[in-house]
Image (cartoon, rainbow, N blue to C red; front, side):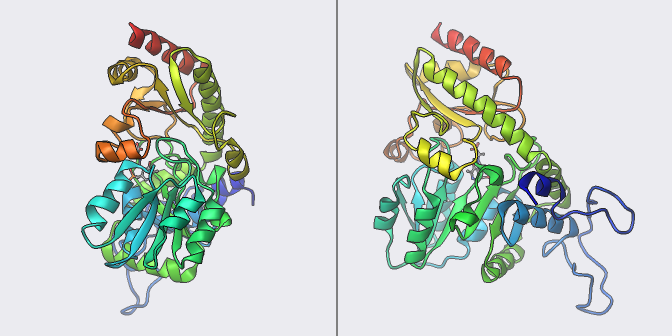
Length: 382
Ligand code: P1T
């Protein structure tokens, strides 16, 4: 089936006992067994749960993967992948990543003897140069958070495989509607389902999608052994969100395209980062790799950090908040909020300006969003 149809139907069918059209929420923590070890496929909800199974089947279908596993957050999903590694193993990661991803790599796994080299992953050669004999994983975000840089996922996956390493693509900014990294050669796709898949800023969750049955088995072992699983109710919220994913992302992209173009032409704006703009250095790659350029935009105002702070505090429709991917528009300053856990010199090395402003463009009327930004620009100037 096509994506929009899968988003509504994959993994679900009317409940055989009641005819319920929507999948039931199964809060049961445990399941009756006929004899010890003989059951209907479920024994304990950390290991598996019927509502979670529906979500996992749904996400696997959307990513074009054979399997998916759901987690309590995007970071719990990331943690499960990093648990595949052992002391002495090495990771090559993009240098523009969600701050929490950088934090778990440097402040949790580095301490356990797993080293990460950060590279400008816009350039596949930089990924290749950083590979060592002990490299086991390439960790990419495309587009990146918050600078909206792209990685050529097919080229980077080929480099990782050449080195005997796995390639992970964090697909949170793109969503499976715009980009399917497994089709491009990635071994693991990570989604923070908190964002576009959930879509309504009312749930925290994460997911991994893979094709290789052995990799699925190893990750499912970690999922059960470590236990970072989502509640059945949270699974159901994500399932409900997914049904409208294509519609929401389509509208968010249209709004973001309009706002990015408008900002780029506006006086007092130093730079706009949006893969849909022809001025974006990787616009051609965006067209090749993504169905649409996404609904995240970042930009820099002329002036200092104080001016940027005045601006983000002056919007009324754009809520000043972390996170992204909900129906409502959000605004933030990554260096002070989502990426504050990255030391200032590391942020500078990665080219992340302190005064960068990030928008998560929602599905509201674009004229209202534009007027809100215009008003806030005037307020920040004054
Ligand atoms: O917040 P959580 O569901 O644990 O997901 C973590 C995560 C992973 N990957 C990317 C690309 C992300 O952007 C995030 C979370 N990001 C934010 C909260 C943010 O505002 O950028």
